[in-house]
Length: 74
Image (cartoon, rainbow, N blue to C red; front, side, top):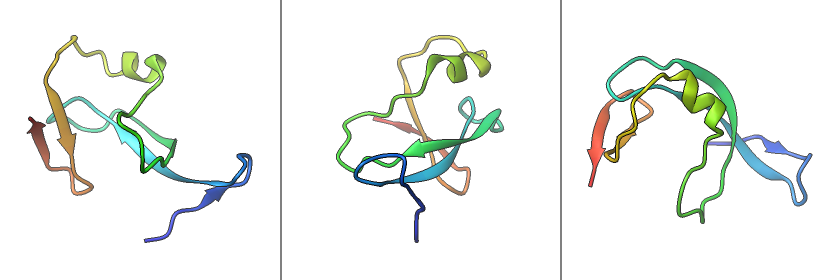
């Protein structure tokens, strides 16, 4: 799989398009450009996009695969 590099960063960095949505629902936000940092410990999403999801605060963690399958992360 190839990812386009954004040359606005030095050194150029890979970006992918992402979509956001509440667990077990359709994607509501996106596509958004996302910086790929393979060494990151967390993912940060600007709060303006999170607010568009209109969800309640929840400490559970969910993952969704590229095929749309959702799972609770432990």
